[in-house]
Length: 516
Ligand code: XMP
Image (cartoon, rainbow, N blue to C red; front, side):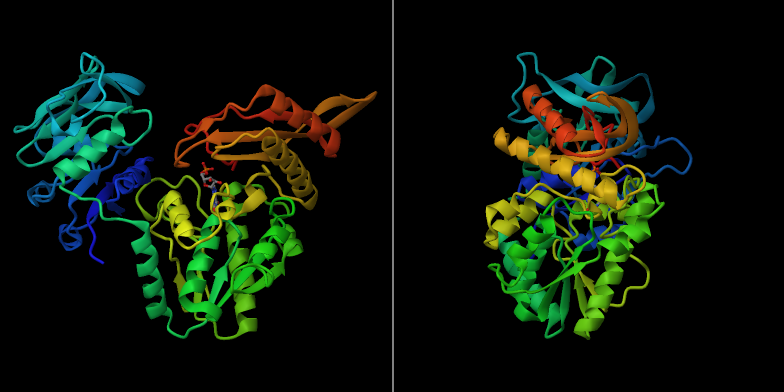
């Protein structure tokens, strides 16, 4: 299927995939590519538009990523964002300087409402709106042919345009929610500047993917790594629709699951569940605890958990005999965040970054590799997977392994499982809905307390709850204090080894959602 494409060229900023997501929310397919992509590759992709992302560099620093003229002469509309806007300005002969005042965070910007980029915005009477800035350099002078179309008190060119060449740039970040009218600006670029019509829809993705999977797999045997989470569940059902009983789903209970989760997964995907799948449950708890003993560094834990996953699959595959393909529920943010794009590696995700070198399968199949989470959910609904599964809050592959700070032991796993169970139960009882993700984590901190007449020296549990639509940025959820107090009382009374409960207020950035 030939579909409209917008490409995001990655200069290493943290919001890169968010830009792609926003474009896809306009029903326009979008992919992130490294900024080093060749002009020939761009021509081959034939995108309707190109977006340059932000990034940590200064355009005038030696060796910093930049472009020569060629990309601007393709006749393809370009939008430069943040560092990307400076790239446009610098390479086309404008002046980029270190700003006298760095701007970071919410900033009031005055826009030229006549520009197509700012069409139909909900502006204050004096053409002001709020945007999200994060920069030390700024465009001091536009290149010739461009005019400034937005400014702030500290930034004379907060946005610029060249209508003729259809090249636009914003110093601020339209892709983040904090830029009040940002989504509209991106829509204006995608539809009005690039001329897209919005032909990216989930039903066509499901049909096309099933056909492609059938063609690719033929009569081969396929092993699916099923965790019971949204991604691997959708991948499994997609595969079962494509190739039926050629598929075996292996569910590894690594002893780092939430309380009772192993049994719940078995109920849904096992022989008594609604799906026609071969289902194998591997109880590998002991093996994991042994491997993780003494390991404290988060990335090392992730790598061990990821590697052990693959080893278990290999063993199961050998038992089944002649398995050609391994399916994984990798999704697009995993691909980008694992540093396969150009952005800095924040965390390696087990299903991509931690993949061991020696894998005894012919091929890895990742049918959701190009989808964002909300698109996976949409695909799940298309496939008829029940809402309670599709709407599950995300649970990381390394599981409780990254919710226990420092060394993982069986005892610590039990503590965090029980605390998390109580937390989830109370949230449900209180009827709180719409949280992006919430869980209990075990800090590695022990502190003194008093219970009855006795001194205690036990662990502190941290409760986390965040509101997020994209998991790239998140704010602490406003859980009613009475609910938190109830959870605290129950955890301390019911969970041995805990004498303190804390609520994490940190947003992302600067924090991450998980603790490790
Ligand atoms: P962070 O902690 O990076 O989390 O703000 C963003 C989202 O990613 C999930 N996450 C992971 N998922 N393997 C996964 O499969 C991982 O190693 C991993 N680390 C974080 C996290 O639960 C949240 O939804």
